[in-house]
Image 1: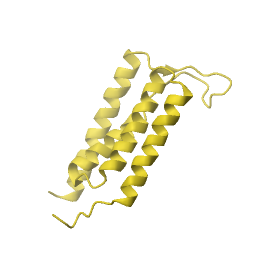
Image 2: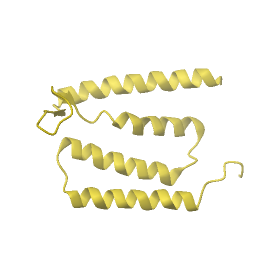
Image 3: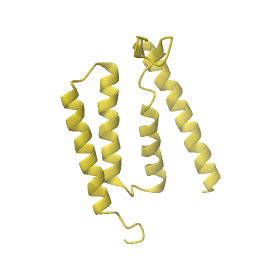
Image 4: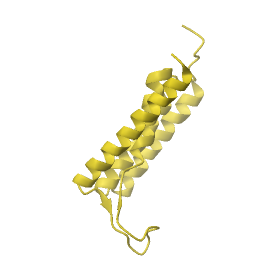
Length: 118
């Protein structure tokens, strides 16, 4: 398949996914109300960063799961962050999750997958 066509398909899938997510977030009131520490002045939707995780999974589906431990680590971080966006998590839970994700990433660096074998 043409590489440009693949990238266009991925773009469309991610655009539609983001629009669907914004609709769901709006329906379930996943919002951030500004306070004195906020960098925004009006109410904004939360959790939009989930599209980056989805884009990594879509890319992996098209081009192969070359970095499984890295993908698992990013999924762990995104999951913890998304849950924290919906309801606050204790710092200890976030710290343990982030530490576990770093261990997975270091494991990936120590044992890279050779895409030329098999």
